[in-house]
Structures are given as structure tokens and as C-alpha cells.
Length: 307
Ligand code: G3H
Ligand code: 13P
Ligand code: ZN
Image (cartoon, rainbow, N blue to C red):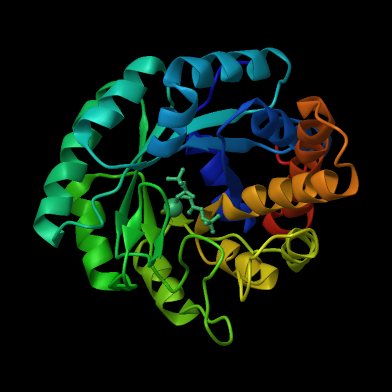
């Protein structure tokens, strides 16, 4: 099955009130775990690659791993660039065969974000590629993505931004952030703002970044076996279900994958210090990804059996 565009996936998700999971991939085990979960749940999937992932694995390896994954599945799968920072990176991955790109001009001022997004849209649409853009800014630090504070998306600006750029989907800032430390006190998202944006942009797919739930099970396991992940807090899963019924068609998850793998590997190292065969811990880490992604698809995103 060749890679597909998000178009039909999002149309169905939008009207069905569910969301498609966009899972960050960095190596073979992560890709295999996600694809297996998708297979078991018969769910469409988005696999996304950050600039950091591209640097870590190399684009050729990513493409070849995806090619192998696609040979073994009939699921609709989108290959998406996560947080593209420039026209050039978007162009490069489009030339390599990605079916969707994010141009992240959220660090720029409104006019400069529009100009950059428009440039990517013109190039991508000529080649049938989907473009996600971002307006507003998420706090949090990742390898290639960082910002000190949240700047929530203004609903009227969102309408103007979509009209002037022609982007296909829009990532909005409503209080989520990247990484494992999303909230100091009680988790809170600005659903009123989300509903307002969604009502001003009918039939238009929105995207939620920073949507990991930072599952306590894995935080506790990581800490029990020598980790130091304290005060970690994510987006409660019922918040994600609510977002999916308010125009959010794509929900981004990376931190939950990192935590699941790390917790299981830490446990293995501590319980069996005499072992040194990487397959013995990368195998269970892959299983943890499969189980966690399966849970998200089935119990949170609602995309099971939506092929
Ligand atoms: O939004 C960021 C993703 O979690 C990717 O993170 O840039 O460290 O690969 P990364
Ligand atoms: P998390 O850090 O919450 O997993 O967010 C990932 C993300 O938004 C990737 O773009
Ligand atoms: Zn993100």
C-alpha cells in the first residue's frame, strides 16, 4: 500500500468526531510498534518525522524503513514532516516522498509566518502534498523546538491565516506544550478558544501538538528503576477525546513513546544486569510502544476500525 494523503482520513475523522494519532518515529522498533498497533486496531496512521529524527536516523533509513513497513500492511499511512522550520526542509522531504508536511512558522510574526507558509503551500500543492501550519506558540523544549511561553491562538487571526495561506490544517495553541512537564498545577486547556476557532473554521481540520498524556504507569516505572522524571504531567486522556469532538483531527504523540520505551528498558537493565543483548530490551520496548499506541487508538483517539 503506498503512502496516502491525510485528506480523506481527516474528512472522515472530522465528521466522525474522532482523531488520527500522529506518532513520532525515530527508529525501526518505534515504526514496527506503531504499525503493529494500527494493524491490530485496523486504524489509519500518521507517522511523523522531526528534524531531530531525520538527523538521528538519516532520511534514507527512514524512507527505507517506511517502505518495509508499507510492504507489510494495507493500512492507510501518512508520512508527515513534524515541525518543518524552513521552506528547504519541506521541499527536501516532499522530493523524498513525504505525503504531508508541517511548516512551523509559529516563532515568526504573523505576516512572516503567512509568507513562509504560503511559499510552502504553493510548492506542496503543486505536488499533491498536504500542508499543516501553526499559529500561536507552544511552550516547551525539544531538540529542535523550543519556546519559553505559550501564546494562545487568536480565533480571528486563525481565520485570516487560513484564508491567506491556503494551508490544509492548522496547529493551534490552547495550553498544551511539548515534553513531559506540561502543567504545574491542575491540567487545563482553553476549550472555549478551541471551540471558537473550530466554529469560525467549519470543516477545517485542527491539530493538537504536545498531546502526550505522560502516562503515570511509565513515569512510575522509569522512576522505580533509577529514573528521575519528577513532577511530570501530561494532557488527561478525556481532554483529548473532547478535543477530537471539536475539530481536532490530528493528535501528536511523542513523549508517551519515549517514556514507554525508557521505562521498560530501565526495568530490564535493573532486573537483569547480566544481560547485554540489545534485542532483549529493544524487543520489549517495541512491545511497550505497540501496547501504548493500541490503547491510544482504541480508548482515546477513537480511530479503531476506521479504515
Ligand atoms: O514536537 C517535537 C517532537 O516531540 C519531536 O522532538 O525534535 O526532539 O525529535 P525532537
Ligand atoms: P508530546 O511531547 O506531548 O508527545 O508532543 C509531541 C508533538 O507535538 C510532536 O510534534
Ligand atoms: Zn509538536
